[in-house]
Length: 143
Image: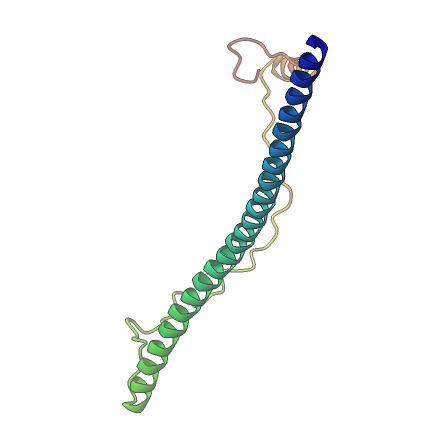
């Protein structure tokens, strides 16, 4: 009878494990459904965030346009008031006067600019040698 008893215990344990496994499958399915719903909410939230950012940009643009149009309207009102009273918004501080009678431009071309030649002995050669070697003479005004 010990075999029957062992068999019954094993069968009871198997049924308990099957029930536990079935409960875990049901829990897994429930969690999968919740995960899918949360994923949909995240997707909807992302879409709403993009839509909100686009609407905020439109509000900023509309506000900037409104301010520009309000400034233009005020300037138009001022211009119309000045025109109706024949008042100019430009004042002449000093009348224009010619400064000279002879034209100052264009200047005549004087030719190429020529540097005077330094006639001191050895200056030209030192300058050329310094330029050719990339070095000048230390302390030399031409180096």
